[in-house]
Image (cartoon, rainbow, N blue to C red; front, side, top):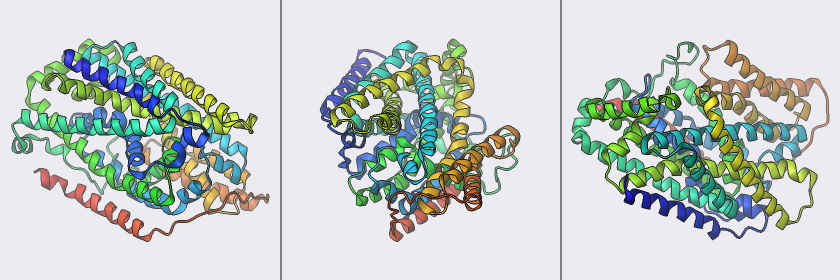
Length: 534
């Protein structure tokens, strides 16, 4: 890196400081946490994808595809459940949540059941999301330290402080438009890596000649995920579709970091467009960075000097990067093959990926803390004081995430692997709680709470004692267990049920048909992909 790269990085960071100032006018909770509900569908969709895809998409996913043992294009199967989940949410859950006018998605559970359901799930969200985000910042800071020799603590502070400042000032509008910018930079970075990767390989034909044929298979209909003790039964078609449907329905519909964007939509018509965009745009983006992973992995196998530089960086940082050698592939490629100036853009892309996730987390955590906890004790708070408290909470949660980042080294060896499993323990039961709240009238709060606990305990049991079942299945099995127990308890123990808010269904036959057809299309494309790459 030289002065040109540092200039690019500094200009980028200064620009984001100005972003918060640009959107500093926030007078109510709807302004600060929902962007005034006047943001169009396209920036909201890009913001949602930026939050979900983030640093994993730019660094770890290409490494999985191109280098990690057992990896390859099967990463595409993560996307199969998305269009089906969008169709379900568009019809059954989101219209009701949107029409309710709530800020914290968990508020609906209190209106339909009672406060205990709301507070329990809100608390779980706050702890798990702040820990996961801290680990993500920690990992990106380690990679920056290893590749450009930027001290770990400086990387954490740069990512954290800049993000907190523009989130503090601008609220959800700053987060959304920041994500749009960061998503654009991230996609530009992927295209740049592809261009230079193909160039170094001598063209597409040479890439197709030397690509590892074992890594180009994406779909396996014979893996069911029920004999997974040795890890060989993962990424089968059926667990990734069925489990993925429940995972993404829960993530987009009931996780505050995503649902808050959906609730920020300016109208039901825009909400429909937002859901369609989420269902249709994710797969092409994922396919692009998966191809990037194949290209860089092929180059690594062809260029001994690339391998040697990765090994040198890894050995120099082995105490902190143990087990993450593959994650160095993209950053080392950037430093080794790209010209100055372009290197700065790609380092900005890595920072953007981390900052988009952190900003979304900070805003969502402060939203649920204000709505689910603070307002319980101060229900008639003036708007001005509400916004002031919300800003202070965004700083608080930003510091909490950075604290986890600084101390993640003590636990990181297991957390990154475990964090997705922890999410899958809870996602199914949480989705079930919302399905019971919106789609049933006979289930009462006691039945729902017992069902949620039963679903979580059932998933924990699977984790501890039934390793043969691939963890993607937990999302579906936990949801079904929660519903079954909740219905049995509610019909056995007679209690009064709350009616809750008005239930709204969206008769989107056209949208459902498009999303269902798109699901078939991406599966067929992924299945035929090896023929295109041979």
